[in-house]
Length: 465
Image (cartoon, rainbow, N blue to C red; front, side, top):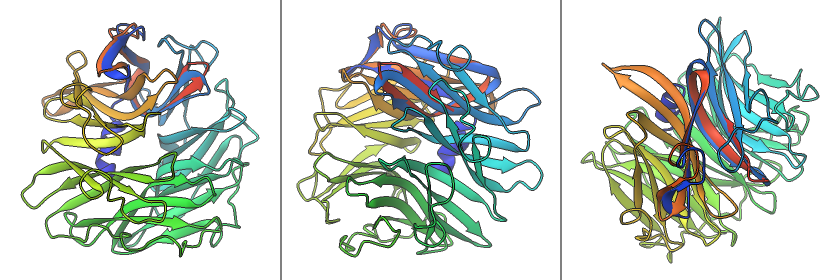
């Protein structure tokens, strides 16, 4: 699923903002929607963060005609207007002439500098590498990081990053995959604040994960005690068989022997089924919540939430003995989720065949919240375009920001892609004070893909592509 999402997001980008009850917030952009075209071709959004000052930071990717693909960032004010203090008119496009680059995830350091991890594919040998870029708070490249602001972990094998997080001291943890011959390993890398590999972590700064022929490390979080949680999925020779795992590592990269192993493969592989690990969260009480997509033997698809105790044991008080299965259409996929201050869970999703962005809200006990949208589910259509909702963030006032990719699908061809942002009210309706009736389409002048979003303390939004 993650590979499918990344492929689609490199084609398109979309952003959205929402109020606490799920209605679009009219105070954001134009009637709750902001759409951005950054370049001259395609853009897509993949991540979103809310900065301490409340600004919204979005991450994605974009490309110009006859140029390489690059990492795209955009920052918005709290109301969805462009933050003129960031980059050029609130937008930054970073390209490298030797590589096509896709922004995967972003984070904000304590000093307000911005770290982006992406996939960089060399134009000549087509080998994909992990790439880090650091920016100053105004969007300028930080030349004190790595080599002229960049770190490219070049090997003879494909390395594809999936997620990133930061330690309080600024160290960077990235998870993803490493392909060697016919085996795909899950990998965990740790970097120092200056971008150099942290050799105190495991062996030469990298820890590998191997269970079956295909191993994907898709999600990472650092606990308050510095231990690292890594979630992913593993499969055999058949792409329709996969199982989830959740591992915890000590700060030195060794496996934490105190973490319960009963559920480290908590869904034994079943022939002709598929489950992919999409995201994980750590609650304030230390409990761990997982998000996945599941396809059963009858081709019925489910969005699944599971909750675990700090020890790694399943939390039997959550939903149905620790698991919530929500039946969805075959073409519906969850991407990311977030947690509100009241413990409610917001899940971002989209549906191919109806071209809708979807947000689900669950109570803290794992049951769908019927005060949100319709029976806990809000479906959002934007203009006459298809929408892929990639990420959601929550503002300090509880309103919900979503980002993703808009695209036009004509005769089996994608003809146009832009990033969008939406803001919703608490009931799932669009905030019509934001963007265009709660929606904002970000046009960088190209095809853009938005992958991440952050909200600063001052209320401004930052979009990364």
